[in-house]
Image 1 (cartoon, rainbow, N blue to C red):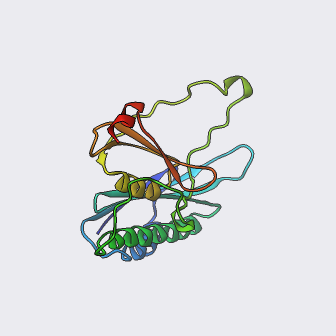
Image 2: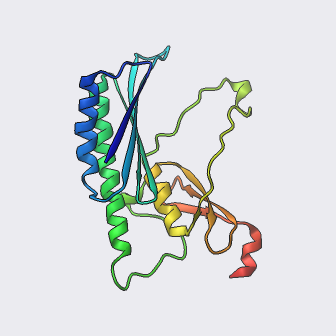
Image 3: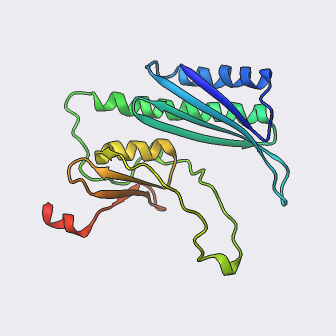
Length: 199
């Protein structure tokens, strides 16, 4: 197990590094599988309207999947502890999904439907505050890898990342699909209209 700790606007002391290795390391032991790599970013954000916020961001690469969580507190040690708890929950969820998939007689999911309470995502997306005249402005460009996956694998990945949408290349059709989190619960999927004739 490899844990890399990086500081942004903060010095990573030996005490902070030990806290990360202890708390996050224990959380990763939930799923005893190799290889597991983990990147932890400790950063400090200053906001005009609020106090200084300490943030612990954890990204775990395990078994071909990515698990990402972010915790914000007024104290870095508290942020690390909360991030570790979040990682443990996500690791347990991932472990359950992997083990369920190996059970004999389990049928693959053909459609993405509303999920259970356990499947609901924790939305920690970056928020940007824009003035009224800038609401329709393009404020950011981000390039993402588009991975070939089945719908079921893409659903698992979206859930683990905690994103409200996930873009992937469908393993069967080769087309680009988008999974999105529905406000009423569960997930939906966007497909090109041309696939209607392929059913």
